[in-house]
Length: 569
Image 1: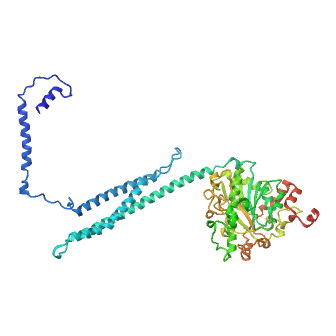
Image 2 (image 1 turned 60 degrees about the vertical axis):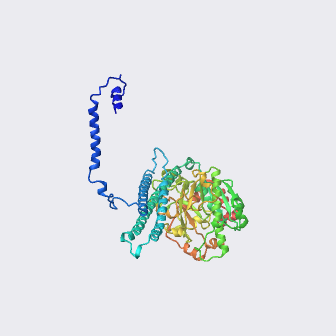
Image 3 (image 1 turned 90 degrees about the horizontal axis):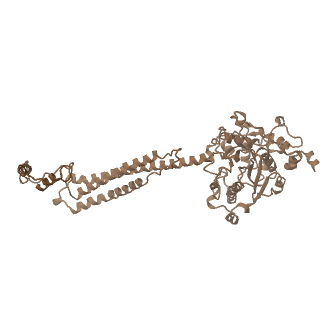
């Protein structure tokens, strides 16, 4: 202490060195005496407070609520309590962090930041905690029984009630902790799953928003349509189908695949159109996989059970599955071809289907659209461009769904022929003039699945990397509407429809198809919920566009009257 005081006098308060001064020790002894008295007094106080340890005896044991007795069972209880506190802390941290990640998962559009992935470590920690508690739950009864065996009760006396209840209480505590952690784990997983779904939906919305931007090619005044057509003995009606869509849709590209079960070839009929459009005729070897060509059977994953048409033979079952598989493969390869040629609009319909504006839209409310009559060239294509340019989101561009409307076999009476017909042509020879009565447009079951129009200039190439499209009615699952969403009355979403002409019984029954029957035909043939004659104006416009002689040559002698057939011959 003397050295410390001397050092303090030399360096001063600020720690700077001072010249040593002569220290007078006269005042130092009283200070030392005061310090010694203070120290002796504190020691005396410690010795004399209360009674001595000998008189007191050993320290009193505290109550269980204040202190836990240190034995094996108590150590186990302490360990469980610490574990439960750790687990509860993990639950709180994980629930908070996951909930925080879920609330902050929505990215800001302006900054274009990618959303952070939700934390997974906390969920895994909870799973580990649940496993630990379950193991404790299984091991706790064995531990209590082992303790009872190692510490038998003397003279067959019963254990105290508190000792008997202790294992049960421990078991109950572990059970409650397992239940608590399990519920917290379920909550954390639900939040994580919801967050992941939010990320996926946000990403899908961005992708769809990008696809909804209409390309300049789709709105170009010089744009044309491409068609993918699978035919089977349709030579008698194919010319009318081509002429109508050539006129109303400006169809200038046609890829035709011939069904191998067809008895006739469309090549001779299509040759007359090659001067007006580019036409390719494919057979199975041009687009079907080698495995199918060798075995004649579709892959097992493409074979579906067919119960809609009653009991059918195994050959018919194979024929139907093969036909459906061929349709999907053909559509896949055809769309790839259209994409490779850098074309825009493409369609895949049958030879008995004709694309027209929605009748409700034409007759009730045009929604500001300038719907041109069928006489004008490109009338339907012009309407499609107006719709896409006005509101591409409503129609799910670039994959526009078209609902089908079935036209029955009730022939139009001569008194109802209010649309003029060129003199040299026979009205009953045209499907679009002969049948005018259709079924209720709101009856989805009657009309079947919808068809689509696709702008291939907007569809990314990655959607064409698969070997086969999702469905002929919905080629691209992510950008095309589902079939369950269709509603003909909502013509804002479905402004374009396809007239489906059932035709006569002779033509309907000409195909050897197990899906067709007389009962089914009669049921569809009698539909008569309304009439539509907008389509009947296309012939006059087509003749004016290509000329009388050329129109007669393209359509063929089937559509001419008997006198004109003889004159032509």
